[in-house]
Amino acid sequence: MSGHQEPTLLSVNVGLPQDVTWQGRTVHTGVWKSAVDGACRVRRLNLDGDGQGDLAGHGGEQRAVLVYQIDSYRHWQRELGRDDLVYGQFGENLTVDGLADDEVCIGDRYRIGDAEFEVTQPRVTCYRVGLRLGEPELPALLVGHHRPGFYMRVLREGTIRAGDPITRTRSGPHALTVAEADALLYLPGRDRARLRTATDIPALSPGWQGSFRELLDDHAPGSVPDEPAWDGFRSLRVAEVVRETDTVTSFCLAPLDGAPLPTARAGQYLTVRVAGAGEPAPVRSYSLSSAPGADRYRISVKQEPYGTVSGYLTGRVRAGAVLDVAAPRGEFVLGDGRSPILFLSAGIGVTPELAMLHECVARHRDREIWWIHGARTPHDQALGDEAHALLAALPYAHEHVFWSRAGTGRLTAEKLADLGLPTDADAYLCGPTAFTTDLEHALIALGVPGDRIHTELFAARSASTPGIVGRAAPPPHQPPGPPGTGPLVTFARSGLASPFPTTAGSVLELADACDVPTRWSCRTGVCHTCTTGRLSGDVTYSPAPLEPPADGQVLICCARPTSDVVLDL
Image 1 (spheres, rainbow, N blue to C red):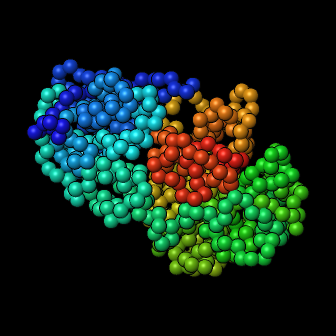
Image 2: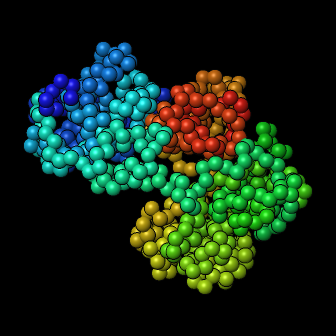
Image 3: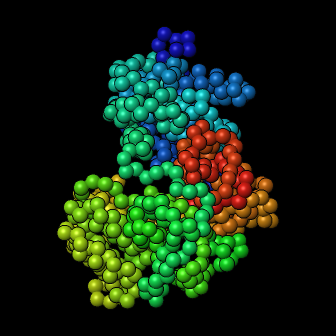
């Protein structure tokens, strides 16, 4: 324990959030902390004088206090060649001598001064610690060197000061060290038995509990496959074109060689590259509306005002045409179980849920099904007769259709509450952003658990940019400055293609410059928050991720294209 019989508190560090300029953006962060002179009061959620800028990722009851060790300071002084490190520079509240990450266990309890703490989780991998030290790769290094530090919750409030001894008052169950827990989440070669053990530790924070359960579920029966059925784009023949309404047309796609198509999961989508609709050939994604296991894929396309691709498909593509199609993808899929199912859709959002309804007829006839759909008028309801016929074949089905411009009026939270929906259900929502957001909130208010509500949006997914403040993002656009000269990067959901510029360090940096919505946290290939579907093309990594993504996926935070690439962004 670094030369001490008993661990010791060397420094108490606090700091309030401040705005910091980073890559032309403003980051609101509390990572800048400095040592307290004298006693400091420990509260349930914080230390006096301390605060966090991003409460979604830091702070709160489970992450009230961050601990880092002086032995790790010495390690990084050697590794980074630094002699300017001071207490609090790693964003920690408590700098300690002892309490090594490979010795402290989740659930251990410690008394410092007259306060008592419990270890809840390792440090979250976050780009802001790299920002604080001017070392962008530091989040990956903390994990790779097994020196993350850890969070504690406050069991008993009290007063602490530098020099206080640290006494362990209880050992956590199952002896899962902080370093081992960190490796289970972020590094390859996981021991599934230890993952199961981790989920049995009551002190482990709910967020990490959920992440470990997701890892256990990844390869469970019925889980969504990681790998697409084929790489890149494949040519499929348009076998049939069906006009569903004045604005919606269905296209049935068959293989050129007549061989069976790989089975898609109900709710997944196809990405189509449409040569002839522009240069370079634009790429769009459309949900499958066909039954799983059908001998043809069917997509149903709504012609959007000023929609170049939808206009080309619905106006010019006929039977016999050939389209370039990427393999079925998507995690918006029907789960197994016996609970009731709520299908809520608006407009063309009916398509993935119609595929799920086909699956219900085939595999879930004993489940209670609620079909709730919104359209402008009966004339505008695409695939309504097909849905009605499927519901008639289900013995426990309820059908409610709302016309926003006729009769019943549009579907609202109030009308949803009047239906008497079961709250122990699994809910699937698809439609415009406002529709899915409003009805998701309505379902939660009615008592449906949030983790049982699944949503799919028409366009780009919502962004997750921790700590970034003070700027409303415009629609995706070409990056400022001269066009790049590298491989073409196509952001399929955003309908944008741009050559990769030599000045960009990663695909994520290009997406940032284009205001393409992205999700990220560490920006160094550790947390996999930025994992994105790779529809075609190849990339290289710098820095190399600690764990490579699955086939057909890419970590955009550290990826650079080596050929033209199409991404599901």
